[in-house]
Image (cartoon, rainbow, N blue to C red):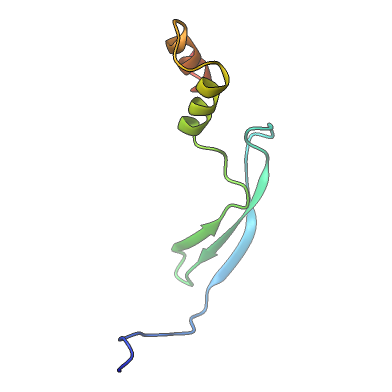
Length: 84
């Protein structure tokens, strides 16, 4: 059995931990982002240790915690999405 065609290289990259994200709230805490750059300045990847929960997931939790859909559903959705 032959091995699949693969290429493995050791390449130089620049690793930074200078970027800070987050609003400093419980839902979106401030955190340091690690980024990996090519020597030409191209962002290759980044690692966010605690990305904020997607708004749609927060919306589903809110609906579940409040008995599902009801008369005020649209108002609750707008509030959760920050669209007052």
